[in-house]
Every structure is written in structure tokens, then in C-alpha cells.
Length: 252
Ligand code: SAH
Image (tube, rainbow, N blue to C red; front, side):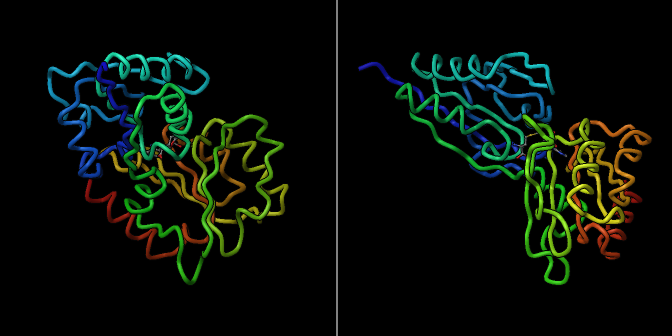
């Protein structure tokens, strides 16, 4: 029987190569074929051997270079041809990474698939800013939501943000005004504190803070660019975490 390759869905973390898992680093270092999306830092890609074939399937909001079905078909085709494929994804493959769809496509085609978790942007950003996502004095619930999804206004986010809760919004830069309106419409206080963390765990990281009502203005005035996370909740306003961030910025 012909050898079938394995597809490795590998989380590349939020940017800094030091935040790869040991397993991810090993797989990248011996990769034959590397299929990666646009969020992967060059320093991570540089770990692959020069001989590795690199295929970019970069996705930008509303601009898919390769449609998802084609990415799935590419992974399956390479594996069926006997090659191991390292499919590198920003953060964790199973947090808004469409890793579920790729794993399903492999399983449906009889291709072995292995998933290597990565540090999701929320975890990386929390560490880099010293904003604890949960804190015994401030939050015992944390939720991750996609700010850019089908029918944002119909999504029920009620109860995800507020006292004692932390809401982390991925892909929310473009929809920031609708997000602020939606949350305040659900009864969230306009002065609920938030932090925007742009390019977490990368040299150009920026952290902006303000109240919920100021979110659209903050995004516009500071020209916040993707990738960025919006973290909403009292954990973002703890004096000690704000000081840690300022100290960090001063170091850079
Ligand atoms: N699988 C990824 C998320 C992919 S969705 C993960 O687990 O992190 C893409 C979104 O992730 C971006 O729009 C942004 O909201 C967030 N993101 C990814 N990398 C980021 C980074 N370094 N800093 C801030 N946000 C990031």
C-alpha cells in the first residue's frame, strides 16, 4: 500500500517564536511542506529548513486568497501523495482557526491528522500585558467571541460581559462600533473598562485602554489594525496591570 502522509495542524502561538510548544518547534524544524496563513511571524517560518516547501494561504478579512475548501483539498492531496504536511496556524488551531474544518476534511478522506495546540492570542496577550483574564477579586468567567461573524447583531452575547466576567473579542477591530452598541444595548455600563491589545507578543505590540463607550473612537483615533484583541471587563483596569504595561512600554 502507498504511504499516506500525516497532516499536523500546528498552533504557532501569537507571534514570538519562544511561545511555540516544543512539539510545534520540532515539527516546523523538520517540515517538508509548510502550509501557513498570514498571521505567522517570519521568525517562526524561519525555523523551517530551507528545503521546506512553503505555501502561503494568507487570509485577510473578507479577502480569502485561497477558499477554505481549497485549503482542505490541498492538505488532503499532499498527504495522499505520501507527504507529511505541517499546517501552521496563528494561535491555537481550534480557537477561531478553522482547524475543525481541516481536521474533518482529513478524517473524511482517510488522512491521519494530528493537532498540536498553540498559545491563543488571548493567553499571549494576557501574559504580555499582565491582565489576568480571571482574578479572584474581579472575574471568575472568561469568554472568547468572534467579533466578525455571520449576523453579529443576532448573536446573543447577553451575560458574557459585565461584573465578574471578562469578554475577549477576536477579530473585532472593523466591527468595534457595532460591538460597543451591542454590548451597551445588552445593558453593559458605558464606563466598563476595556483594553485593546494590538500585535500581542510581537515587537510592535500596543495596548490602549478606555471605557466601553469610547471603543469606536479609540479604534479610529489610534488607527488600530488587525491583529488586535478587545478585552472587556474589570480585570483590564486593575491598577497593578496598567502599571506593568506602562513599565513594559518604557522598556521597549
Ligand atoms: N487561532 C488564533 C485566532 C485566529 S482569528 C488564536 O488562537 O489566537 C484571528 C484573530 O486573532 C485576529 O483578528 C486577532 O483578533 C487575534 N489575534 C491573533 N494574533 C494576535 C496577536 N498577536 N495580537 C492580538 N490579536 C491577535
